[in-house]
Length: 293
Length: 314
Image (tube, rainbow over all chains, first blue to last red; front, top):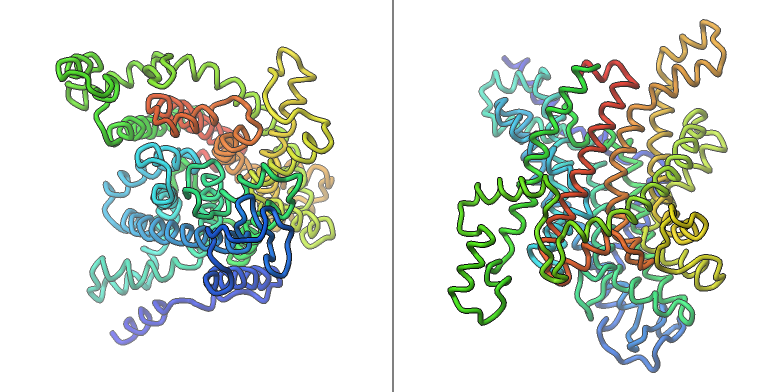
């Protein structure tokens, strides 16, 4: 009996080792960039002034010590607007991914571990869900709730559900016949405990890769929607909205587009590098209509 | 192979059913009464009722759904209340430019991405691989709308080599048509090519480590045979899968690129429709695009079955 307990206990311990970042230069670069951006976003109210105040001495000022990223056509400080836009981007990405991933993983774990009919039902649902490409899914949701950041967040959360569900289900299917799960069940652990304490914990590493990918995809789509004028409403800043507005002033103010684009690009770069470091892109395996065994 | 293809076809049926249901329900979720909306403000209640009956809104939801799907299957998506035209006509006008854009951008992405990834994957760690990996990581990180805006500014505004907006049908006037399509197509293709190259690289590198590749080399097959028959053919399955998923990116990207280059198409049609809350147009457009995506994925699954017998057994 003790032997079985030990076995179950030993293998159940989360394998954090396997998700520790490798001594990979690209991974370190990704973490470093991401940290800098998160700190900048967090400290935005301290570092920069009011993003909507129209109090700069002139419109479309070139970058200076006073205004590191220059000013826009309404005499607003672009440094402040970019940092607050970054805040919005990160916030919306995180909320969308956390909501989508937890809902998706829950659905997927139960589909994989639960009874067959639940699995069949969930899989058909997920297949149909995945048939909506991200942008189009967002457009569908925005049709219902109207343009705005709330709708974008909800749309992206929904967009993230099926990919996590698929991944979690595949993990649950491979884990559920492993010895440690069997022994846990033999010891009388209920399905809830098995899913949470055993399956979920061991499925973390592949989910982490997907987390980084989903975050970059969500932030990108949110920025694209703001760029199209379907996201954050003016005067509130968003990276996509800033880049859209800057197009009118490319000739006289290169900095207007350059800085918000660079910040968004760095964010994408950092998340891509991180996803690479966590493992190979897992998304090759799931797609509409492919049944996994 | 036939039974595999038939099985995949059957699996697509529930997917299409749920997809159509979702698109149908979206419009039901929209706040406000469609009949009142159609009748206009201050219409007498009797008139609203008449319109409600006319639109079939007084019948049970299930009946409405069946009628809607039946009409949609015949190409009838209702009438745009903003433009007063049948949605079918609007889609018939908007679809060709988007298909044309996709037909240029997609082969371009494949032609750049797949060979680049294959070359890098065949020699992991080599100088070529390092360069390809670095370039693709950066290309993935550049948002499509930034690239489109920059290309527009450099090649259309500054250099004046290419038109900044509009569209000339390629089939009618190839030279001017391609001139108007090249910037949008390149903006779309770069990110897709980068993603394809990354996946192809991983797939090829993985296949090259397999025992059967080593066996093929060991038994003295020509390197060319090893590459084409053993390595690349087996790397094809994940690449086809990603390539078909990229069609979704293509549809989403077209929405943005059409906006930047003020090019007519499905994306502009739908973005404008959302802004004026022209629901029938969004509904019809969504249905057409999503069904197209499902069909492409189905075709890709069948192609995977052709490329790799093991897939058929799964």
